Image (tube, rainbow over all chains, first blue to last red; front, top):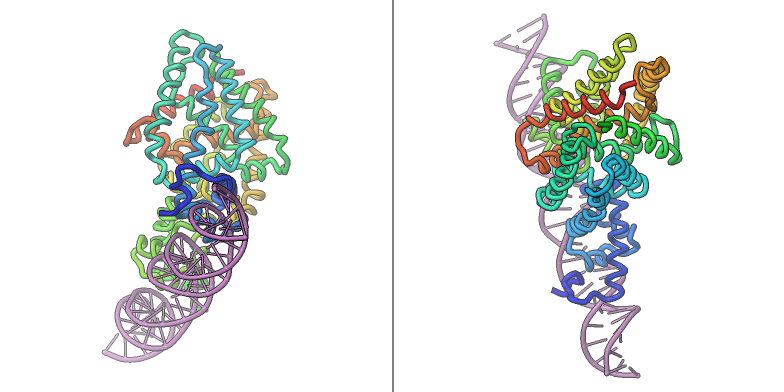
Length: 207
Length: 207
DNA sequence: GTGTTTTATGACCAAACGGTCAAATTCGGA
DNA sequence: TCCGAATTTGACCGTTTGGTCATAAAACAC
């Protein structure tokens, strides 16, 4: 196998082109979905010919899988940063804010994940039952301790996390709906959303 | 054109087969998305041959479009039922409950819409800028009156509606993630979710 | 500069896809 | 029971798609 991906030491060109392909693929997959995206689209968006793209990745699926793997860490970073030593309501407020900022700054990543979830996450289930589940368990325990100590209202930790995910990701995944309803084209509504969500969770979590 | 869809009075067979096709299409489109679904899949799921399916619908797109049109009313019914004459917190609580029940009972419909949103809702934008937007404006005004009267906490009406949509639809659209994190296979978590969301919005909306 | 490895491409292929069509079958009313 | 309309189907078609391959061009090490 002379495939680039299998080399021990990637060359400069390999690194550059691989990145270009993944960057383009994020765009294409996020807007058209896995099946809606074609190799020709991916190649053109990356500025390569189709066979050239397939020189760097074994298949369309390979590009998609690589993209998802790289994204998981970034995507979970905000939750990872939830600090058990900090002030509970401030920590949760900060988490909501960070997560909302990700929806604003990385909507394509959000949509890529959402698309995966919608289709049952066939090429992604392992990661979810493994690392994701462990991280959630860890942070759910932190939240449970906070409620037990009476520092925040009594909430189901798992479902609180789901609620935070849902309300923040909504602004990326359902962007067209938000824009249609608010009848806007700029990003100003993110500030309103931030204020709304801050107030919502602050009141809901008051002990 | 001898196409069935153009007849003035549909026969019994036309009604039955059309329904069977749409029922099957809901299943297939919801799990595979528009591009991921094939005519052969649709036909087999409906128990028909491919040409036979195309006798009832002009194209794959025609099936998809019809499905979406039929769904919109059902989907907005819970919000429509929000009664300006009722008790504010009870009304909103009931709305959250109804919406969550829809996620439990009609997850495929939810995913179908979500898929449409993710891809930018190309074949759906008009409906969103029209009827949907009007309905939201109407109900947002109701919520605004409630806050003005001091009956609920001060909230941005639009973003409150977004939050309710987000947290309830999450349980349908991201079902695999919820199941993976909770490590469950039955639907029992819907009751926990209902309790959690009831408490969350009750506390958040307390005047 | 030369030789070797890496990178790029045009031509091509088999399979899958959306859709058509003529002919066969079934249905329903008189 | 008969007849015309409605329904169903197998065979077929052009296009698109994911992917291959031999060959050419560029990069690189010496």
